[in-house]
Image (tube, one colour):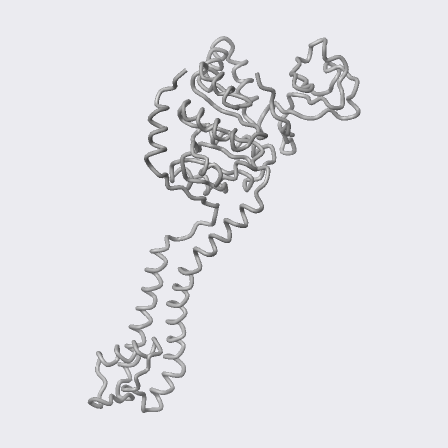
Length: 365
């Protein structure tokens, strides 16, 4: 099966180098140019104030060239004094002028230097600080979740996995849109700008050390290429992919996806169910909305439940995971529960309810 646009994407990847970089979440700060402009404005104000102070007491100063100090001389003296140049051609001679230099001009000189030197040092150290943050982030990142695509599907997937207890610093978003990555970092997630079909972009997201990968791209052909690349880089990660067309689901599984969600078909089935039974549609929507109302969770079997039939459980058991098989609650093959089984149950969502994700890969068809 040849997917539409696959050749165009391949040519684009070969012909153009995609600019990509890692962006870590950070506190909202002013734009660097605005910060520099603000500090330069303060420095100019300090310069003008110093010149005015000198001109107000110009009789207490002497100029070696003509003996008098005018407004231009005041600005000249303020400039060379605040910059610590100090040519000595204009000097305070009266006691009042010298006291003013001690208690007013000198503090203004220190303030002027702090503003200019501080701006310079901050500009020089910003890149080094950012590199240090990236290196520390990479060294600490293990068993994280990579989400490709920060659209509606990607955001909803992140919200669901974070509702289970996953920390935001364990989520890395990959998206070719700079605005999408800015939105992701604003929510506290790390982001990588770039085309996820390229292995170097996924490597920047440390995908080879990821525990699970969620692919929620806008196009099915892009999802196939991303899945192939991600599976090649990480053989053990759980890969879940969303596609629009149901006919592309088998191709995604052959490409290495553990689970494929057909978004269009799923939405259509929910619409049909809501038409036939609005109440049943509400219940289904409640089940897929993590953290409110009823939740569908997966948990291990505890020792007190070993040997029991699923019907005898206090929780409402829907299915039993035994090895690589998913058995219905009424399947005769279940018999008594085993300690290695895992249960899919429906529970009432509370603030203390957390899903225990399965660390094993899902069975492949």
